[in-house]
Amino acid sequence: MTEPRLQVHMFGCLRDNYCYLVHDTDSGLTGVVDTPAVAAIMQALDETGWRLDFILNTHHHWDHAGGNLELKQQTGCKVVGPRADAGRIPGIDIEVGEGDVFELGSSGAIVYDTPGHTSGHIVYHFTDAGVAFVGDTLFSLGCGRLFEGTAGQMWASLSKLRDRLPDETLIYCAHEYTQGNARFALTVEPDNPDLQARARQIDELRDRGEPTVPSTMGAEKAANPFLRPDSPALQATLGLTGSDVVAVFAETRRRKDRF
Ligand code: ZN
Ligand code: FE
Image 1 (cartoon, rainbow, N blue to C red):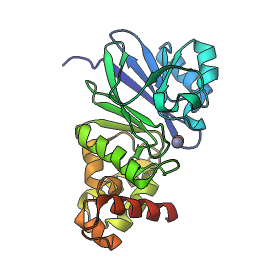
Image 2 (image 1 turned 60 degrees about the vertical axis):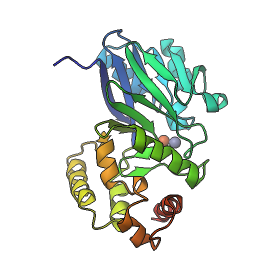
Image 3 (image 1 turned 180 degrees about the vertical axis):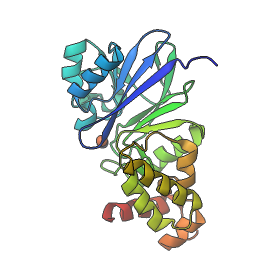
Image 4 (image 1 turned 30 degrees about the vertical axis):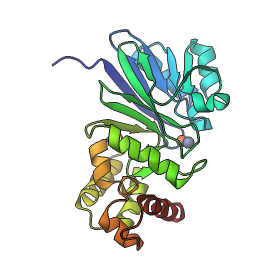
Protein backbone atom coordinates (compact mmCIF):
# COMPACT_ATOMS: atom_id res chain seq x y z
CA MET A 1 0.00 0.00 0.00
CA THR A 2 1.27 3.45 -0.85
CA GLU A 3 1.28 6.21 1.74
CA PRO A 4 -1.52 8.70 1.22
CA ARG A 5 -0.22 11.90 -0.28
CA LEU A 6 -2.54 14.08 1.76
CA GLN A 7 -2.09 14.06 5.51
CA VAL A 8 -4.69 15.67 7.76
CA HIS A 9 -3.76 16.93 11.23
CA MET A 10 -6.89 17.72 13.20
CA PHE A 11 -7.11 19.72 16.42
CA GLY A 12 -9.80 21.39 18.50
CA CYS A 13 -9.81 25.07 19.43
CA LEU A 14 -12.06 27.80 20.81
CA ARG A 15 -15.17 26.30 22.41
CA ASP A 16 -16.08 23.61 19.90
CA ASN A 17 -14.28 24.36 16.63
CA TYR A 18 -12.14 21.90 14.70
CA CYS A 19 -9.26 23.15 12.63
CA TYR A 20 -7.26 21.13 10.10
CA LEU A 21 -3.74 21.24 8.72
CA VAL A 22 -3.52 19.52 5.33
CA HIS A 23 -0.13 18.47 4.04
CA ASP A 24 0.78 17.17 0.59
CA THR A 25 3.70 14.84 1.13
CA ASP A 26 4.88 14.98 -2.52
CA SER A 27 5.38 18.72 -2.62
CA GLY A 28 5.70 19.41 1.10
CA LEU A 29 3.03 22.11 0.79
CA THR A 30 0.72 22.74 3.75
CA GLY A 31 -2.62 24.44 4.15
CA VAL A 32 -4.86 25.22 7.08
CA VAL A 33 -8.63 24.97 6.71
CA ASP A 34 -9.92 28.19 8.30
CA THR A 35 -8.29 30.26 11.02
CA PRO A 36 -10.30 30.07 14.24
CA ALA A 37 -7.32 30.53 16.58
CA VAL A 38 -3.84 31.65 15.53
CA ALA A 39 -1.96 30.38 18.59
CA ALA A 40 -3.45 26.90 18.24
CA ILE A 41 -2.57 26.83 14.54
CA MET A 42 1.01 27.94 15.21
CA GLN A 43 1.31 25.22 17.84
CA ALA A 44 0.00 22.60 15.41
CA LEU A 45 2.55 23.75 12.82
CA ASP A 46 5.21 23.44 15.46
CA GLU A 47 4.14 19.90 16.39
CA THR A 48 4.01 18.68 12.79
CA GLY A 49 7.09 20.56 11.63
CA TRP A 50 5.11 21.76 8.59
CA ARG A 51 5.47 25.27 7.15
CA LEU A 52 2.25 27.05 6.27
CA ASP A 53 1.73 27.90 2.60
CA PHE A 54 -2.03 28.44 2.31
CA ILE A 55 -5.11 29.32 4.30
CA LEU A 56 -8.16 27.63 2.78
CA ASN A 57 -11.23 29.55 3.95
CA THR A 58 -14.70 28.04 3.81
CA HIS A 59 -16.54 31.24 4.75
CA HIS A 60 -16.12 34.66 6.29
CA HIS A 61 -17.36 34.12 9.87
CA TRP A 62 -14.88 35.22 12.56
CA ASP A 63 -14.33 31.68 13.83
CA HIS A 64 -13.24 30.71 10.31
CA ALA A 65 -11.44 33.76 8.85
CA GLY A 66 -10.74 35.84 11.97
CA GLY A 67 -7.09 34.76 12.18
CA ASN A 68 -6.29 35.28 8.49
CA LEU A 69 -4.33 38.53 8.67
CA GLU A 70 -2.29 37.66 11.75
CA LEU A 71 -1.44 34.20 10.39
CA LYS A 72 -0.56 35.63 7.00
CA GLN A 73 1.71 38.16 8.66
CA GLN A 74 3.39 35.52 10.83
CA THR A 75 3.92 32.90 8.11
CA GLY A 76 3.79 34.68 4.74
CA CYS A 77 1.13 32.25 3.53
CA LYS A 78 -1.43 32.98 0.83
CA VAL A 79 -5.16 33.16 1.49
CA VAL A 80 -7.52 31.09 -0.67
CA GLY A 81 -11.23 31.81 -0.33
CA PRO A 82 -14.64 32.10 -1.95
CA ARG A 83 -14.81 34.36 -4.99
CA ALA A 84 -18.45 35.08 -4.22
CA ASP A 85 -17.43 36.52 -0.85
CA ALA A 86 -13.99 37.97 -1.63
CA GLY A 87 -14.92 41.29 -0.01
CA ARG A 88 -15.45 39.63 3.37
CA ILE A 89 -12.37 37.38 3.41
CA PRO A 90 -9.49 39.25 5.08
CA GLY A 91 -6.28 39.17 3.04
CA ILE A 92 -7.65 37.05 0.19
CA ASP A 93 -5.09 36.32 -2.58
CA ILE A 94 -6.65 33.50 -4.60
CA GLU A 95 -10.38 33.46 -5.33
CA VAL A 96 -12.07 30.13 -6.05
CA GLY A 97 -15.60 29.01 -6.80
CA GLU A 98 -17.79 26.23 -8.15
CA GLY A 99 -15.85 23.68 -10.19
CA ASP A 100 -12.41 25.22 -9.66
CA VAL A 101 -9.62 22.87 -8.60
CA PHE A 102 -7.21 24.19 -6.00
CA GLU A 103 -3.88 22.36 -6.27
CA LEU A 104 -2.02 21.82 -3.02
CA GLY A 105 1.02 20.44 -4.78
CA SER A 106 -0.11 17.10 -6.21
CA SER A 107 -3.30 16.99 -4.14
CA GLY A 108 -6.22 18.62 -5.93
CA ALA A 109 -9.36 19.90 -4.25
CA ILE A 110 -12.55 20.52 -6.21
CA VAL A 111 -14.40 23.55 -4.90
CA TYR A 112 -18.18 23.57 -4.51
CA ASP A 113 -20.26 26.67 -3.89
CA THR A 114 -22.59 25.82 -1.00
CA PRO A 115 -24.66 28.92 -0.15
CA GLY A 116 -27.09 28.77 2.76
CA HIS A 117 -25.19 29.23 6.03
CA THR A 118 -23.54 32.24 4.37
CA SER A 119 -24.04 33.39 0.80
CA GLY A 120 -20.41 32.71 -0.16
CA HIS A 121 -19.72 29.44 1.68
CA ILE A 122 -17.55 26.91 -0.18
CA VAL A 123 -16.47 23.30 0.37
CA TYR A 124 -13.11 21.74 -0.57
CA HIS A 125 -13.17 18.12 -1.78
CA PHE A 126 -9.74 16.50 -2.11
CA THR A 127 -10.89 13.84 -4.53
CA ASP A 128 -7.86 11.51 -4.61
CA ALA A 129 -7.54 11.55 -0.84
CA GLY A 130 -11.30 11.11 -0.40
CA VAL A 131 -11.51 13.95 2.10
CA ALA A 132 -13.94 16.89 2.20
CA PHE A 133 -13.78 20.03 4.34
CA VAL A 134 -17.34 21.19 4.64
CA GLY A 135 -17.04 24.10 7.09
CA ASP A 136 -20.43 25.04 8.56
CA THR A 137 -22.51 23.69 5.66
CA LEU A 138 -22.79 20.04 6.71
CA PHE A 139 -22.27 18.84 10.26
CA SER A 140 -22.20 15.32 11.54
CA LEU A 141 -25.95 14.59 11.84
CA GLY A 142 -26.71 18.26 11.25
CA CYS A 143 -26.28 21.27 9.02
CA GLY A 144 -25.42 24.94 9.44
CA ARG A 145 -27.98 27.54 10.42
CA LEU A 146 -29.52 29.51 7.58
CA PHE A 147 -27.99 32.91 8.30
CA GLU A 148 -27.86 34.20 4.73
CA GLY A 149 -29.75 31.76 2.58
CA THR A 150 -33.12 30.18 2.01
CA ALA A 151 -34.00 26.59 2.76
CA GLY A 152 -34.10 26.03 -0.99
CA GLN A 153 -30.52 27.25 -1.40
CA MET A 154 -29.25 25.20 1.52
CA TRP A 155 -31.00 22.08 0.28
CA ALA A 156 -29.46 22.62 -3.17
CA SER A 157 -26.03 22.86 -1.51
CA LEU A 158 -26.51 19.80 0.70
CA SER A 159 -28.03 17.66 -2.04
CA LYS A 160 -25.12 18.57 -4.31
CA LEU A 161 -22.72 17.24 -1.68
CA ARG A 162 -24.91 14.18 -1.18
CA ASP A 163 -24.87 13.46 -4.92
CA ARG A 164 -21.23 14.24 -5.68
CA LEU A 165 -19.23 12.99 -2.71
CA PRO A 166 -18.69 9.22 -2.74
CA ASP A 167 -19.97 7.34 0.31
CA GLU A 168 -16.48 6.63 1.65
CA THR A 169 -15.51 10.33 1.61
CA LEU A 170 -14.33 11.50 5.04
CA ILE A 171 -16.42 14.49 6.11
CA TYR A 172 -14.47 17.00 8.18
CA CYS A 173 -16.81 19.65 9.56
CA ALA A 174 -15.87 22.70 11.60
CA HIS A 175 -17.67 22.11 14.92
CA GLU A 176 -18.21 19.34 17.47
CA TYR A 177 -22.01 19.60 17.51
CA THR A 178 -22.69 15.92 16.92
CA GLN A 179 -24.14 14.82 20.25
CA GLY A 180 -26.75 17.59 20.28
CA ASN A 181 -27.48 16.93 16.62
CA ALA A 182 -28.04 13.24 17.39
CA ARG A 183 -30.50 14.10 20.14
CA PHE A 184 -32.49 16.23 17.73
CA ALA A 185 -32.27 13.70 14.88
CA LEU A 186 -33.80 11.03 17.14
CA THR A 187 -36.87 13.24 17.64
CA VAL A 188 -37.59 13.35 13.91
CA GLU A 189 -36.52 9.85 12.85
CA PRO A 190 -36.71 7.81 16.07
CA ASP A 191 -36.98 4.41 14.39
CA ASN A 192 -33.99 4.75 12.06
CA PRO A 193 -31.66 1.90 13.16
CA ASP A 194 -28.58 3.53 11.59
CA LEU A 195 -29.28 6.69 13.56
CA GLN A 196 -29.85 4.74 16.78
CA ALA A 197 -26.55 2.90 16.37
CA ARG A 198 -24.73 6.09 15.51
CA ALA A 199 -26.16 7.94 18.51
CA ARG A 200 -24.89 5.19 20.83
CA GLN A 201 -21.45 5.31 19.24
CA ILE A 202 -21.38 9.11 19.59
CA ASP A 203 -22.25 8.92 23.29
CA GLU A 204 -19.42 6.45 23.82
CA LEU A 205 -16.92 8.66 21.99
CA ARG A 206 -17.96 11.76 23.95
CA ASP A 207 -17.87 9.87 27.24
CA ARG A 208 -14.23 9.16 26.47
CA GLY A 209 -13.66 12.77 25.42
CA GLU A 210 -12.98 11.77 21.82
CA PRO A 211 -14.05 13.60 18.66
CA THR A 212 -16.97 12.33 16.57
CA VAL A 213 -15.37 13.84 13.47
CA PRO A 214 -14.66 12.81 10.74
CA SER A 215 -17.79 11.07 9.63
CA THR A 216 -18.33 9.60 6.16
CA MET A 217 -20.80 10.64 3.50
CA GLY A 218 -22.33 7.16 3.59
CA ALA A 219 -22.93 7.38 7.34
CA GLU A 220 -24.43 10.86 6.96
CA LYS A 221 -26.76 9.74 4.18
CA ALA A 222 -28.00 6.94 6.44
CA ALA A 223 -28.61 9.01 9.57
CA ASN A 224 -28.48 12.79 9.04
CA PRO A 225 -32.07 14.08 8.78
CA PHE A 226 -30.88 17.14 6.84
CA LEU A 227 -29.77 14.81 4.02
CA ARG A 228 -32.97 12.76 4.24
CA PRO A 229 -35.99 14.96 3.37
CA ASP A 230 -37.08 12.18 1.02
CA SER A 231 -37.35 9.70 3.92
CA PRO A 232 -40.99 8.59 4.34
CA ALA A 233 -40.44 8.10 8.10
CA LEU A 234 -39.09 11.63 8.52
CA GLN A 235 -41.90 13.07 6.42
CA ALA A 236 -44.46 11.20 8.53
CA THR A 237 -43.07 12.57 11.82
CA LEU A 238 -43.27 16.09 10.44
CA GLY A 239 -46.81 15.58 9.12
CA LEU A 240 -45.49 16.23 5.60
CA THR A 241 -45.95 12.87 3.90
CA GLY A 242 -45.53 13.26 0.15
CA SER A 243 -44.43 16.90 0.42
CA ASP A 244 -41.74 18.56 -1.64
CA VAL A 245 -38.23 17.86 -0.30
CA VAL A 246 -37.49 21.57 0.19
CA ALA A 247 -40.56 21.95 2.40
CA VAL A 248 -39.49 18.90 4.43
CA PHE A 249 -35.93 20.19 4.74
CA ALA A 250 -37.21 23.65 5.76
CA GLU A 251 -39.45 22.20 8.47
CA THR A 252 -36.61 20.01 9.80
CA ARG A 253 -34.36 23.09 10.01
CA ARG A 254 -37.12 25.15 11.71
CA ARG A 255 -37.61 22.45 14.35
CA LYS A 256 -33.88 22.23 15.00
CA ASP A 257 -33.73 26.02 15.46
CA ARG A 258 -36.30 25.68 18.24
CA PHE A 259 -34.93 22.45 19.74
ZN1 ZN B 1 -20.10 29.89 10.35
FE1 FE C 1 -18.42 28.23 12.59
